Structures are given as C-alpha cells and as structure tokens.
Amino acid sequence: MNKSIFETAQPILNNLITHDYQAYFVGGSVRDYLMHKDIHDIDITTSATPDEIEAIFDKTIPIGREHGTINVVYKQEQYEITTFRAEGEYDDHRRPNAVYFVRSLYEDVKRRDFTMNAIAMDKNYQILDYFNGQQDIKDKIIRTVGNADERFNEDALRIIRGLRFQSQLGFTLEESTYNGMKTHIASIEHLSIERIIVELKKLFAGKYVAQSYKNLMALQAFDYITFFKQFDFTKFRVNTAVEFSLLLAALKVQQPTVEIPLSKLKISNQEKKEIAKYMQLLQTLPNITSKNDLKYFVYDFGKSDITKVLNQSELLHNNHIIDLQPLIINTTTINEIYSQLPITSRKQLAINGNDLLTTLNQSGGAWLKPLLRDIECAIIRGEITNQKNEILEWVKKHVKI
Image: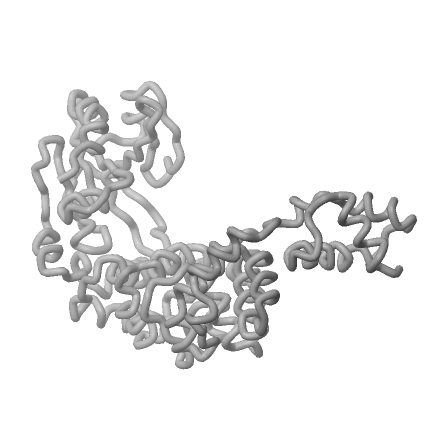
C-alpha cells in the first residue's frame, strides 16, 4: 500500500495529538488506500475546533471556517482539516440549517454518505470503522451510512454521488440504498446545476459508466435536471466512458430540434467552445468525400479532437449520429495527414490581413476573412508554399475584389 502521502501529512496529525486533540485521516483517501488505489489528496478530521486549529498552526487559511474547515499550510502544501461535526435539519435537500462542532469521531462519521467513505485511520494506520465500510469495500457494495431515506433526504446530491462511485468503482448498489435513491430522486431538482455537473463529469468518465447510466435511466434522473430534461434520453445510449463535452455535443447533434442554450449548464466559456467545436466536427464528418476534404478537416479540427471522436465510434453508432468508416478515416491516417500539413493554424501564415490590404490596395471588409481561408486551403492543397511573396503573387492572380 502507498503510505507516502500519509507519511508526508503525519506531522499535522502529530501536532494536533501533541496538543491533546484527536486527529485522523478520513474519507476518500482512506477508502482508496484500502483499495490499493492512487491517492491524490487527503482529508483530516479532528476534535479541535477551528479556533484551536488556528492557534496550533503558524499558517492557516479559513477557506470553509463556517463549516468547520481550515486549510493548514505546511511545507508549501495545503491540508484540509475539518472539525468533528454534527448537522442540524436539512431544509432544502442541499445543506444543513446548522453545523455543530462535537468531540466524538463517531458522531462525525455517522453523518457521512456511504460506509466506504466513513472509515477513519489514525497515525499508526489503525482503522476505525463503525459502519462495516471495509466489508462493503471487500464485497464491492455501495451502502449508505444508516438509513438510506434519511441520508438522501438530507442531501439529494448523494444520489448522483452514489452513481458516480458505481461508475468509477464498478460496485453494486445495496438494495435499500437503491430504493432510497428511487424514493428521493425528484429532490435533485432542488440542487444547483453546478454541483450536479461536477458529479456527472466524473460519472461519464468512469470505467463502469454503462451500469451507472442504466441506473440514471431507471431512476429517470434526467427528468429532474435542468437542461437535460429537454432531451429524450430513451433515444440516447452510453456504454463506455466519454468526455462530458463530447457527450453533450453528441446529444445536441442527435436531437437538433431541442433548442436550449448551454448557458443553462453554467459551465465555462471554454467548455462551451469545446462543445461547439465537437458539434461542428460531428456535422462535418459525413461531408468528407475527397482527400482534400480530409486535409481541410484535419487542419480545422486538429488530430487530438478528431482522435477523441474516432475513439467514440460505438457511442456515435449506437446513437445513430454517424457511422465512421475505419478504412477511410482512422487514427493512423489522421496522424499521417497532420504530420504532413504545411501549416496547422492560421497564425502560421507568412502573411496577415494588412499585407493583403496593401497588396490589393483595398480597405478592410467582409471579403478579407474568406480570402484568408482560400489562402489556407491553397497551401494545404500544395498549390503554393507558405512564403510571403509566393502567397501575394497567387492572390494577385486569383483574387478579384
């Protein structure tokens, strides 16, 4: 088992313990440690209150102080430390109306979502497991801590999280846990779309997404999520892991009559651009009928994005979006064409708009952009090389304004 990340954080626990407080590693890092999986970050829980944590450590960041979380900076690394806490009633299926600091580890872990995430570990790697999380990990079962109805009624996002864990781990949903999801699925409509998107991105990237997707469909989860409720998911199948942006592009291309803006998802502008590019790529693919078309296609979209799409041939076929012809368009051909392109972006052109305005003695206008495109295509076809004088001579011969 990889203990190095815990060893690095040992001084944090030791400092808390030296000051007569309890301190443990908890949550996903402990779960992944027991499963022999890579660990990327760790969470620490302690009986010390936020005030007491800040008094002990020299450099702290009160990033989530009202919820009992303080970030401790130690040797240029940040460690998230959360005080043992209990929670009041949940008024909106999203967050508790109050958080209470407690001195008991048991009181803290009993409020967590699933048994596999409610396991704590002390500085000597001794496990504290009040809810048989280790056995559930061994049996590959996702089970709520305590009563499923209570856990999902408190925070409906736990339903999506449970399906996300299933997609990542390939575990089975325990019967009462699944039934609790079914009972409370409508409550996810109260969640912010941002919280849902974070989980869906991980879910669709999971190795075992096929089973999780079946459960999403069986639970009719998309009926309660803004943006997604507009689409007919009975027509859409997902059997293998897929990048979220590409999934959305495929969905919109499959169902073009659904006119709902991506702004409803509250994703970044960069993600919106990625989705638009994937959509254009998918719509362009069927129109490739010649070698030059293929060259333009590789130039316009780049080998990375094209390869991602080619790797989703099953998704595209199953959803009747496009049937790729592997003998004509495949990664080997795409890589070969890309390596032979004389330029790979407009920025590499040996001329710019001002050069064209000067040469043609014209002022700017709508004609300039298509002319630059014609020049790009001529270079890609091999009619001219990317040399300033040669390009301008070609323009004088072929362009009439």
